[in-house]
Image 1: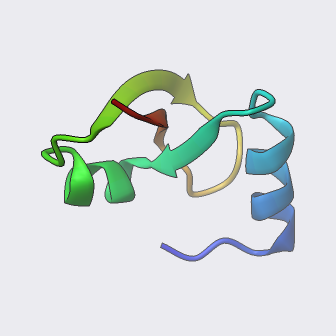
Image 2: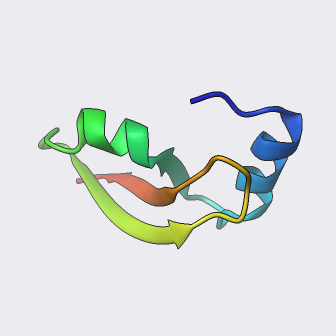
Length: 58
């Protein structure tokens, strides 16, 4: 999935300080990693983006 500058800016401005955002596509690739925990954060209002997740170690 590709995002233009506007899409990236929207994802960045919709995040929380100190949190790591992952797209649904990334989540699907790494969701079974035992050292990562994912919290759904809902959809981002940016063209072409679906569900987003916060990723944390532990």
